[in-house]
Length: 343
Ligand SMILES: Nc1ncnc2c1ncn2[C@@H]1O[C@H](COP(=O)(O)OP(=O)(O)OP(=O)(O)O)[C@@H](O)[C@H]1O
Image (cartoon, rainbow, N blue to C red):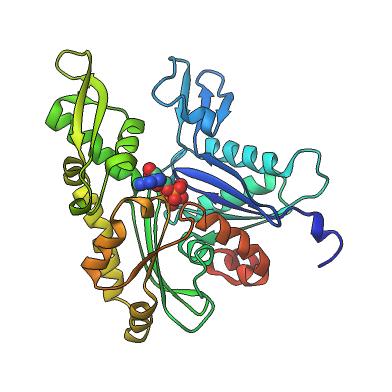
């Protein structure tokens, strides 16, 4: 390692639809914030980014909006994504630093070629010396400690906010994969719709997420809890409280949960037999916030007949894997995402 490289603060960024994490080489994860930006609508001025902006969702006056610029695994608002990325890079670098970092960004798999270029440019604009992209399932697998470079099959399932990525990895490459636009957000929406239909009660997406995390389960036999929730009665227009059970929430989330299970099954069906045998032995690895949903591992195990493991820190895997990819930057340069640019 040259004397200067020790000071470069190279970083890996998980630009997620729900959360953005920044991993700085030698320091671990230094930023962990929701991917939300609050802006003044008339001037387009950025008022808050991250946690502070998330608190404003559903609570802003007319001239301020709190936006999630990445939705459903794609960049819904490019300019705001760029501002957010710039804000996080500069916060991680600390303005006074003279050294320009090399940055690896993990982007949702649904982004287009144009958007990939634009993310690289945004990173350069924000002060990066070089910018590379990495595919989300590869970053998740590296972060979860799977032997991605060995001649053995690993199956990774990353259940994020906007997307679920399922991939079989061997010898440093993705052998077969599937990405669906179903993740934690879809579960929240299903809860909002269920409560509306069953109780004529309107709740916000943050309340729905809270219900999912507190009493939601993918294996209802294991859980029977209740929760009081508050919202607006659609008939009277007034605030109202109702009590919901985990069984009801399971019913509400059943369809999107089974979409995730089906994506895993169809990936397994396309997996070459030798690699399927490796996966049978090693098990399926779950990462992403959705891996924390109560009972999801048991459901996948019973539906596929394969052993299932949950990564140690499922929310951090992509950021850690993105950061670790920096250590083998030569390998990164050769990946399909970056070699078009290089060649
Ligand atoms: N304990 C929990 N139980 C259920 N879901 C959870 C839990 N904790 C977090 N989540 C969900 O995980 C999702 C966020 O996960 P994560 O941070 O991995 O997504 P992301 O990387 O930002 O999204 P993407 O991979 O789609 O870009 C949210 O939908 C959140 O509600």
